[in-house]
Amino acid sequence: MPDLFLDKTPLFEAGWLTMSPASTRDEVLLRIAEAEHRAEAALEQLGQTLTQGGIPASGAAAERDRRIDALLALETRGIPASGTVADGAVERVMMEVGFRKRDLMPRFHELAERCRAVHRRALAVARDARWALMLERAAADPGGPSSPIQGAGTRYVKSDRYDARAARSLPPDDRVRADRFLKRLGEDPVPPELELSALEGTGLWAMKAGNGNRFILRRGELRGVACFFVEDVGPYPDHEGGRRGALAR
Image (tube, rainbow, N blue to C red):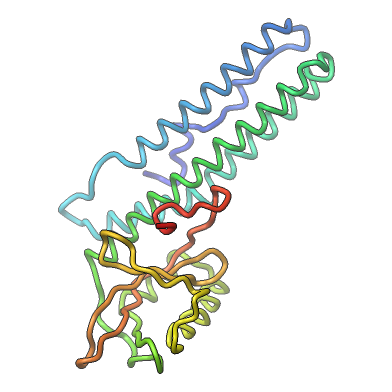
């Protein structure tokens, strides 16, 4: 799953909208419908690509890290770049063809929104696939404590896996912001705005880490004290207008 595998399975290609200003009304409508169909099919193929295959038994940890990195690159660079291509292609044909067939302008606007919706859904698919692998990694490769027990109310420690994982997934400013959020976990009671909650069926917990980022934690014990081990952190942006996938439950 290389960072640029969208080159092989593009969500949108400008060539899908190739048409002449002399094209008939029916020809324009047909080409628009074909472009929408191709974009939907590409989204379906993307979903299948991201969910197929398992983690190899040999070098599993390295392969999991590679896939997480690739998905993050896809979500932050590959899919947004594809969305820019789609917007540019639609705008071009609106200028070249739409203004000569003004009755079709609403159809071009509908196409633009359909393309944006496809890309929003693709972002959510990539996010959910990445987050599922992050949960799998935290459960399969838990770390030991790398700091003294923190917190006056809820106790927590950072896992010795945490810093490396945070550096891979968040820029420096977001890591500083995440640490500020983490300190609030130690308050008594835990502030409800942190949204600390168990993730059903995983044995793991999640909470806010600022800027749409979230922590992954697990319950453990250190020197006879029950505490949270902070295993991972990463972006979990809202691409779906308020829904947050598995974290909404």
